[in-house]
Image 1 (cartoon, helix red, strand yellow):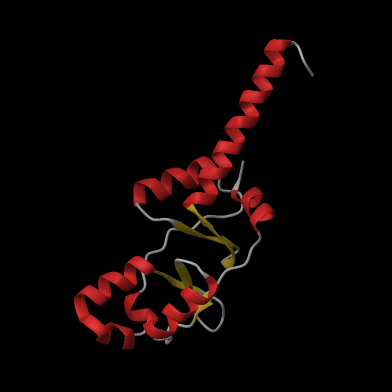
Image 2 (image 1 turned 45 degrees about the vertical axis):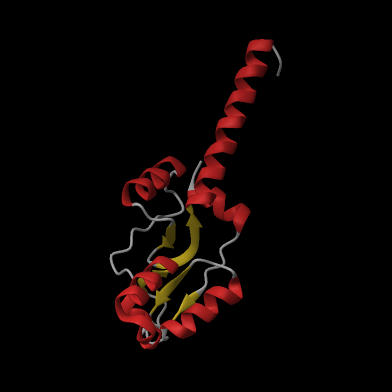
Length: 144
């Protein structure tokens, strides 16, 4: 199973912010959409970074309330691991687990086409394993 299969089921909506957005603005976006991460993009749509609740909390701990005046580009994670539609779910899971991050932007020819979470990839892996078990049970039982 590939990331393309997850996006086909989940959709390709990605919430983005400009690099100049303040952290206060970003928190409103996160709350309004009930999400834990936004992708920071340039005017031309280029991926610049990713900004999570964890990033915000770390900066609040370091800077106090003044962290809310910082800009997304000052707080975001810049070295972002990405996937493509053809990335396998197994590979995505392994990268997310090894890197200890929960969201993976999906790029196609350098353009953001989706975002998958660790929950998305775990759900896909479980579904895939259930299908394999059902197939093996049918084979052993002599079914179709």
